[in-house]
Length: 451
Image (cartoon, rainbow, N blue to C red; front, side, top):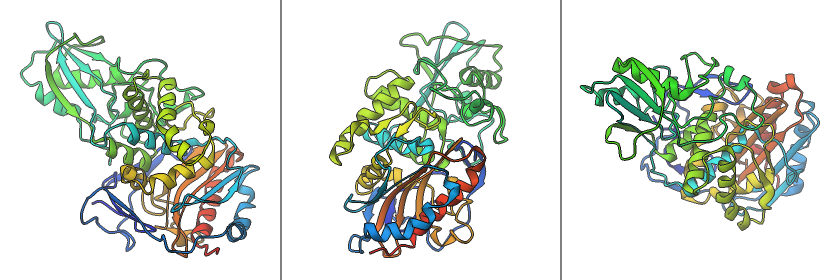
């Protein structure tokens, strides 16, 4: 069942993550999360038309003085550590309303995925799919060619995982083909497979797999959450296909030029991948989308290439709102790198821009709804933040020492605001306390009349 947020926006666009369990993959909070039951504030979409209508344009706009007073107590919370950046922008006009360190670079953690999502929808067709193929190799060989789809489902896909493309479907299409070896071709992506500053524990802790153009179940080796991922996702994909085909060997190689296609499966659409990436805070999907942006702009499908491509895609939008082109200094597409830097003012202005452009509707529909789905499904469920359940739609961000929350909120007066709260001086052991403090900030924003 598709669910819809009607707090300040009427979203007539599909939500990803249908039923079952969603897995939140922010560092420090990776665990299965159940999608709650329906709420009176959420209703089925009657039209499924990609139309986004901003509501509350006539509602009173909060004043800077009012916002400052409303957030003063929450901003003094010691759980936020010694450094907090704040950017609150009127989503209708794009006018900044309250900014503290908003133009200073911060470590964004997974809120960087918003920039990746915007870049993907700027340069990639919304209905584009990534097609994984099996082509004819040498005698007795078939070649499994990766297209950069980490959602290709094998035997270890978690519940709620996008399953448009299945390894088993490739095997069915290959019925009757005599296969001695499976050759895996993962050459679409190049360069390092671990991002700048990434910790080895990201892979062993199950937060991400080494980036590969060919993978099944995002490199998962188990259906249990937080278990180590494969160190070589392409070979693991080949092994699983070989088992289905009763092949005797798996090797890495290259598909012959012009080889006949024997089988193929396609991923969900780019818009669906963007939604799922944001709702689940899916690091593997973020890196895959970043590389697709690079390929679309004829740049290398590497970490450096995806960063350059994201900047190129977003720069015209930043120019429109007079934000410095240096506002995004990312080193990856997922926000996993502690070397990433981003100005909160840039993120809020991007959110305000995409809120009035139907092309970017999947960004907004993909943002987790407070108290209902994704990485916010277990937050805003009790006082003092439960009053903001359904009123806040935001991307979370968590790294050691960093807690962030960025998205949209409807105020008590009905005005829609874009916000970014980033605390990047949080004690290592204080992640959960910092998250709770950020939730109280967003709740104060939702409760604000502030005129």
